[in-house]
Length: 289
Ligand code: ADP
Ligand code: MG
Image (spheres, rainbow, N blue to C red):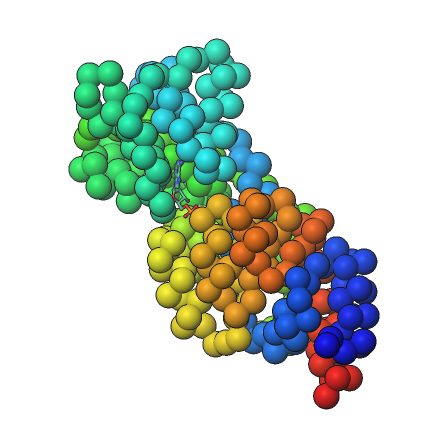
């Protein structure tokens, strides 16, 4: 049975919004060497807004982008659909929509042509060539820490959109507190671009990050980091990573599937409570031993 000291540590953590699903999870947190964070929806709020549109025919680009993103559940998609609706632009009708993890979304238009919205990797898959203006927009957005969506029909690029996401409040303090409790190498893992990752990492005080990762890359890296490894995620594409890590930590604003795959749930999405939970877990382990 669970030692009383562990039960009382779990109860104390729960009062602070840190829900351990088992005493094994509490014990695992005591031994964690590396904490890895997902970016979108974990370090950031995943409440994205379109901040910029670079297109020769803006309504046409927005209409196609909204038609595509209406079929996606990615947080970027909601921002695109919302800006089109706010501007009174009807989404173009597309069919056979397919989400491509780590890339974006593709579909077929009324004329049977492939249409797509996503990142540079997806644009390259479509053999699209970006103009100098479009390339310049991508690098400016990246330096601002904003993600970008490229929308195209066949090899033609209709436009580039900037999508900004706010950091969760208190993230820099939360990461510093983790370092203070002996987690020397917190790291961010993201599917987003190198430039965006670099900007966001600097804003929260993370010196280590890995960018442009496909979901399978995240799994591999979790296996390679100095363990035991805790992975903190919100769930959009994160459930396998949470399950793979020695300890999966879900932020509660995330998806149900992430919360199911996790060993620990931060019920008020407050990552600032993680460092305190590490100290609590270690104290409980010392007392039990
Ligand atoms: P992360 O949560 O780490 O940002 P994802 O695997 O969810 O990683 O996404 C990786 C990248 O794939 C995003 O940064 C974005 O560039 C692109 N992407 C994925 N889905 C979409 C979508 N529906 N629309 C546009 N871009 C997308
Ligand atoms: Mg995410």
